[in-house]
Image 1 (spheres, rainbow, N blue to C red):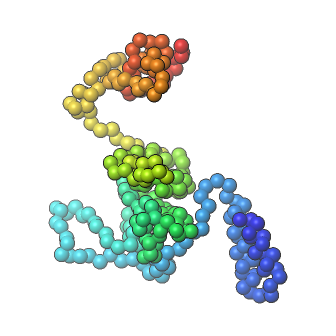
Image 2 (cartoon, rainbow, N blue to C red; image 1 turned 180 degrees about the vertical axis):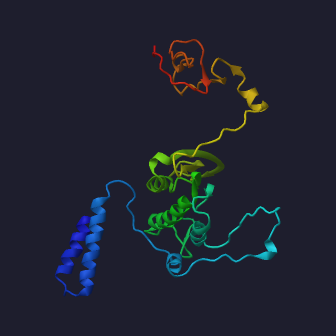
Image 3 (tube, rainbow, N blue to C red; image 1 turned 30 degrees about the vertical axis):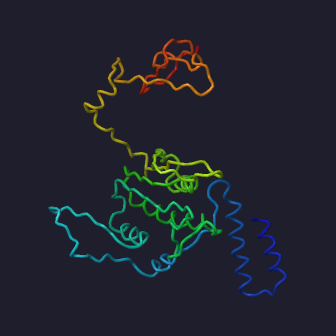
Length: 285
């Protein structure tokens, strides 16, 4: 990139100097500064959408469809139909730092007509496929963060096509310390079958918090849970589950009974106790 900037600057130096060449040189200086300044993270060609230009001039306004109103005893829920960026801009004025949970199911950018940018499908041959998607996502996720309360969480579905880029993007927006986990979801529908790629039956949900104040409340421990976690010790309930032996290894090397009191590779049982609620600090034999 720096070499290309240098070549362009040398070319401009040989051209007649006017206001346009001066503006271009200023732009190249800013671009060079950006390239030199960013050592880790996402570097991509940022794009503006047509809706960005509209929102620079106009403020979005909601219009009520009275025929669709449902009387819910005074509790109001909204279903907003329209461009999601315009909707988020409007919600920022009315629900800033008030939302506890946001779920985002974005286009996965597979190149198979699942993502439109300025009303045009972005296909696998588009050289700016990823940068258009990242520009699209950054503006919306940045606004979504502003809507979250201090204990709020956002869940974002994604698959292999953009999960790596989305993780870095969200780290930049929310901060890596507010990354709460990556959930793996079985889709039940194989994709990518053939000789070129490995068949895939999973996608992901990335979970981020606005601040460190966000916590997860556990599910209630009911009778069905008691049947599963049917053993009790001085710490809490637990269950026994067998360790899996990896292929090609003799059964005796699969080892061991793992519990809170010891880790041993010479133990006769091949079971593991879940969950581990204390650090494992014992000596490994």
